[in-house]
Image 1: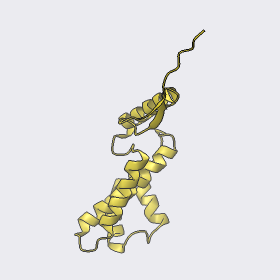
Image 2 (image 1 turned 90 degrees about the horizontal axis):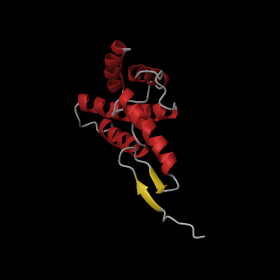
Image 3 (image 1 turned 180 degrees about the vertical axis):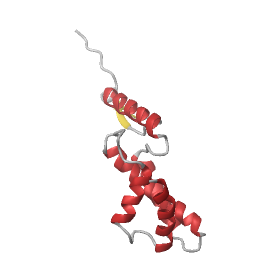
Image 4 (image 1 turned 90 degrees about the vertical axis):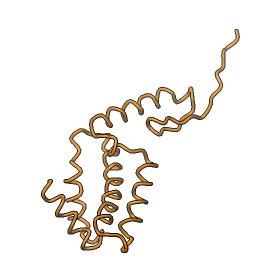
Length: 134
């Protein structure tokens, strides 16, 4: 009796960023991809990011807020990019729990726990924005 063997190959999903071996990891990938799609519907595309997206966002944000020649508003945006990367990681680690704290509450907690994380002028702007929102 001959058994049919299927060739395995590495593939990448553009929807969820998952790299996997087909057909062995097909079920695992499908479950992961569905979970991310549901999370994106609930939390939005800007907060449900792949590892690579989070790292790129943090790196770019850090390079912006550390550039003292840029206007304050741009530097604040850079800090928010970095914080978004951290928030997205925490959200992923929670299993995309729908009761996870809001982004605004996350920012306030971060600033309270690490008051010297950013220069004073950036912290002051972030506190203005998020103390009203939380």
